[in-house]
Length: 237
Image (cartoon, rainbow, N blue to C red; front, side, top):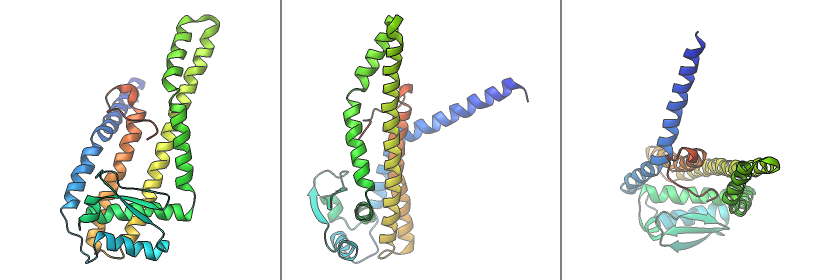
């Protein structure tokens, strides 16, 4: 095969992959919200209310140690240090969305109980936020030193290498978050199988996959920031 044809094939493949990654980066959030609205309109096939379901999981797996706090942010449901932060909308809706969200956050609680994955991730994120403050100053200083040249050229290169290492750390943390979210969703499906019919568990699986896609979108936005074709995001949030 002609070498020029191989080059063309590689360029086309790269552009197709780039378009796919950009699409995920820019539209995964909308896909998740559409999925959320659909799931929020489907009534869960179980007589338990969301809070009764949560209490069931809490008693069975956590000896009742998980505390629930109500928040106002609909998209802010989260778990941290034996505390489940749930919006009033999640608590009050008997929808599949509510059951899936509660299950997922209780999946994080199970991770916290079984090991130190969440603690290690939180440490890396705190470290990343500290280092992230220096990203732009290091970048600007590196460019200036390289432009000045002479003996300052290589220190400038060193500063840019430092910027690259900070970005690599950010990408590593985001990949760890994706892995942790995947495991939490697996635990969530195991919880849901105890109370929901199989067809609704499958709907929850697709919903949780859409939610995890938003984390991939965050990863791709960081990876492709140089294209200036993605939405802005924070490196270590």
